[in-house]
Image (cartoon, rainbow, N blue to C red):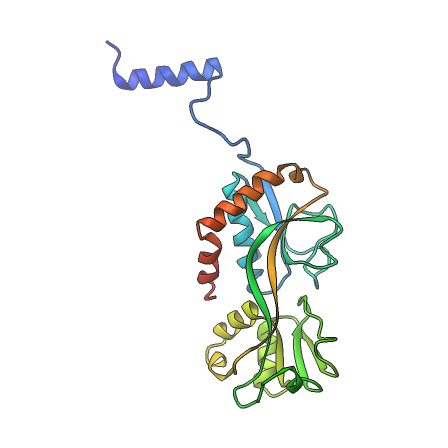
Length: 247
């Protein structure tokens, strides 16, 4: 009489020669999606030559939910806006802008952030009128344009949110403008700085969105990726990633 182990191997061999699939497959195993983000912490960070960050973790979650592998790509195109040239890469995490429109198709939002202005506790900040004519730090990769919301500001462009906050603490600028996510994360990295900041003044809200390239073959799988994004949202995956970064 054939033992259980022998029966098990017999079934596997029979399946192999007959072409019968014993286990389901989504057909995407081994395919790699390449994703881009602005080189701005916490969205993208490099360590020991490896690129990762909040944006890449979110795009990786969508990719894996759809059965794809994911690879973060270092910015090769417009480093300021964080948007690669048309035809470069498969996925992008960004806020809506004119630079995104030509060759990237909206897949869906993953979270909402606010554009804020913040100063030190000792500096009054009741309305945007308090900011006009003052020295303001703004990261180069920011999607926010001060005019016409703020007039006559003296603008200091920085590379990272931490650079902006250092200028604020040193008295080189009066206020910092940017994404609340970025400013909050940077303040948390700088310890005592977060306690010195005043209450942020909200200037507007924007959706942080995943896009897919219209110039790549992956556009054909838009429906699959969109369903995967929705499932990840329902599972609370994006909220977990935000919490991981202290947001």
